[in-house]
Length: 284
Image (cartoon, rainbow, N blue to C red; front, side):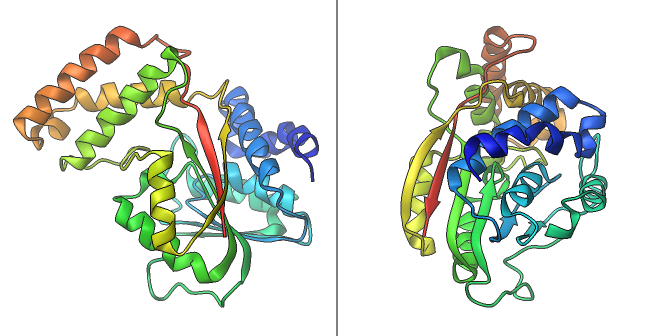
């Protein structure tokens, strides 16, 4: 399936998501972005895919469309089905399971692939996918161990994440919001947000060989129209106003965070902040 074919399916895929009941325009833009990424990976019909960090299934739906009726997507997440708002992971999965893509998808929530009880035979999957989920990891070591764990199970890695290097000045607010959240996490103030261990594209490329993967391609990914910049700015400012999160920080870090939050309030727009670009890496 080529880029235009998959992207043309985005409206129907988005409409099949439970979150579209609440924010149809947002769901459509998020689905279009993922359709563009998956099309660039050239996942053939009939493929088997292991998706790590599937969340509410935004990427899962696109992958299921790409693999076709003869393919299979095993969608894994460490979170419980009750996690997420305004739609939980379980609610979103139930909607997808009841639709035409349902027979192609096997959702497995509350599943950590680092648990020895989770195992698959060698080369069970044609592709293992991590899409906008790697910053959720508690550390780069945990990400490396996860990538090493799944290495025998899949022939190819398809990875996409936000790019920490801003291309334009209007992406600086998103960047600052990400870095502040990362600083808080690194200094011991743990939360449940989207940003826990932000790292660069170069950081990923340095990490892959130690996990047994050899990168064979890397490309920038456009994110125009995505709302993640606004979401992370709001999350950062909320964190900076939460005494419980700030209280555990060393005093110099706390003052640094508060000062950066002051800067963020000045440079960020009320809404419509431009998101950072993303990047895609494939490896074998």
